[in-house]
Structure formats: structure tokens, C-alpha cells
Length: 533
Image (cartoon, helix red, strand yellow):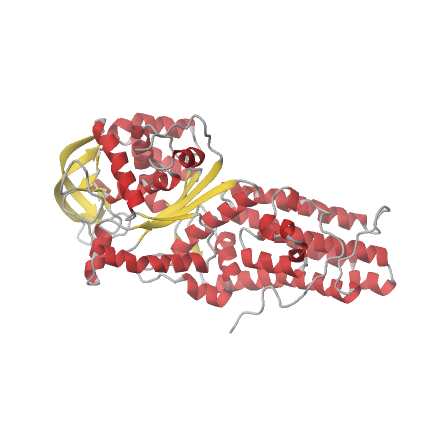
């Protein structure tokens, strides 16, 4: 068994994770929402020069998956094996740049679950007992009667998460001494107020712990679809213990000590707010029990709503990402959800609002701007990017100064991506897009060309192309295809590997005045053509 001697290796990797997704059905745009957000953060950190490890995957054990398999006339393993490829299809469709994809049925994971849980067992953090209470199969969650919602008869028997009936169960289990870690959890929340974000979610978690923690079941004896318990034949580990441990499995726990030292603790777990308790209470307590560091942050985003209903597979309001990508394109899909919705809050999707974002922000603002600048370079300079004249004051220096300031402010404004404030960062970038349009109107390159003011025209065109280069760099985490297309149109892709878009790193890549003169631009097709009827 590998020992974790990390004395010679220190953390040097930004480790970001999505939740691992349940496989009772195919993915919908709610899953795409979380995954794209994690991907944008991962791409942003790579662009910022960080080593990144980005994990996503699938949660394949548990009663819900077993039932889904039975309903399809399949074994649980056959069911999950059949569904997993559809998740890989979603990742490819949305251009997700994950470094690892973990399945909880993989031997590398089941072995780590047994190793970790055996450690808790041997040190006395697990004890045998009888569980009698309520279980929600849909969320694989135990609830007390006080937590349940009343049905139409006023009887408390509905899940607070889904509003569906729970089951009364009684079984012999092994319990985790969660209650003993309440003081340590409260200390964690006090000393690290950014541990759970947004802030309102931290207050929710603190209140839950302060109300008193009960020990929780760590094994199931009524189910055989799970990771077997080494010291108790006939038991499997409760699916949430199994699932949460995926984060350290993929980091290298118990198998690759150097990788584990470089990656752990995770920098941010991105999750939906419905699984906050597991990640902000149970998970850090498990890690504390094992003597491992807790993650640096748990970020619980809001629900994605359609006509007021939470996006899910089971209420039939789910929309597959392919439907939207086919109509709006990949880049609009990725842009829309992060621009339209404040990531920590609930947000409503509508086809009409997505059309408006596409037409206004992408086609009219960014797309037309790029087409306008490239057309002028082709028309006035034969497609060759001119050099800005050396020396001398520009005829309209205030316009150059204003645009330069807007470039700097936009790049600085994108730093909020580190805090997952995607909407705010994109708003600052679109201030620059608007500023570029104002700059073109102020400098009037068509008039400069007509008047034969060649030096000023060169300065104007070179400034515009340089700003477009910077925009291509900084939009690449959000809209990778549009950024690559713009990079190609600007002629930058022809400069060799050092100028590949994937090789660009901030802050140097956003420095103004770095665009080489003499590039040959290619206007080509519109970045964002008119949407089909």
C-alpha cells in the first residue's frame, strides 16, 4: 500500500472538480451548466499560467442506479456501461477539457474506497448499529421526520429535495461518528469564511451543524450494488461515502503519492446547491477523520430553471445540450449560461433569451466588430496589417487613450473568473467590445482613407487588430471555437507554434502593442452568422 510521504513534493496544481453525475438517465443542460463552468475556470487558470487538473465523472453505485437498471431489464453494471458513453458525448459536444474522467465502478476507485474506509474502521470512527428512518432513493439521502415535507394529507413523508415520497427503512449498518466532528466543522467555517461560497450557503451549512449533528450510516445491508465492505460481508458502502471519495482517488490517494501531494487539497469543488450538505459537512468530516486536508472551497451554484421548474431528468423539463448547440452553436451555448445567470444564484433559461444574447452580444456586437475591422484591413491595406507609426502624437489621442484604458480594464475585470463571477467578468469584456465600436466611430477610418491620412489610418487599423487579438485570447476559455476562428482570421495562426492560441499565457498575451505588423488577415465567413429560422 502506497504511503503518502509528501515531504519532498508540494502542491503546485490547481485542482477543480465537478460533481460526479448520477446515471439513472441521460445528461441534460443542467449537467452541462456545471460542467461548462468548471471547464471555463480550468481553461482560465491554464491561460493564467497554472498547472491544472480538471476532474469530472460518473457516480455509478447506489439504489437509484440499481433500480434504473432493473426497469430496463439490465444488470446495474450493464445499465451504467450503456449510459456512460452518452456523458462522454456531452463532454465532446461542449468541448470540455477535463484531464480525467472517473467512474466509481473502476477498480482504481473501489480499492481506494476500501482503503480509506478501513482506516476509519480501524481507528474507531465507525461503529455497528441499526438505522430506522426515512430514505429518499432519488437523492440517495437519509432524512429525519422533521426534515420531510407534508403531503396533501398533512403527513410528513415527502423529500425536501424532490417533493416525492420517501421510504421508511430499517437495516443493520455501520455508522460514521459524524457528531464528534461538529466542533471542528464549526471552527473550519469560522476560520475560513470562503470555504463555502456563496456566503449565504455557508450560513445555511453552519446553521445545520449548530442544530446538532447525528451520526450517519456509512454502509447498507439491504443493497448489493456498491463497493463491498471488507470487514462485513453482505454490506456495501453507502453511495455518498463512495462518491465523495472520488475526489481523492483521482488526485492519487493511495496509489500515486507525488501526484496526490501536487493536487490535494482540491482548490474548488463545483456542485449544485442540492448536494451542499454532503460536500460541506460530511466530506470535510470524513477527511478530518482520516487526517487529510479539507478542500479549499466548495462552491454551490443555483438551480437552472425552465419555466420555473428545476432542470432535471425526472420531471421531463430537461433539454439535451445537443438541441441548443445544433441551433445556436457551441460558443453561444457556453457564453449564454455564464453571461445570463449569476453563477451562485438560480437562473432561468429560455429559448428567447438565448436568441437575444446570440443576436445582440455575439452577432451584432462582437461578430460585426470583427467583420468590420477585417473588412477595412482588406479594403484599405490589401489584407495586410500595417505598422502603427512611430513617434508623434495621434490626431485623436483621446480616442487611443480611452481604448487603451478599456482594454486594460477589461483584462483586469476578467480576474473575477477566479471567484467564479463569470457574468461580471463577461460584462466587463463587453464594455471593451462596445469601446472598440466607439473607437472606430471616433477615428472614422473610412474618412482617413478618403483623405489620404495614411499614418493615422495605419495607427487606427493596427490598434483595432491588436485589440481583437487580445479579445481572442481572453474569450478563449468561454468560447474556444470562436476564439480560434478569430485568431485564424487575424493571421496569427500562421506565425508558428509560439503564436498558437493554446500557447498564449497571461499577462503577456494581453499586453497591448504585441501584434506583429505584416500579418495577412482573412475575413472569411461571419463569426456568428444569422440564426436559422
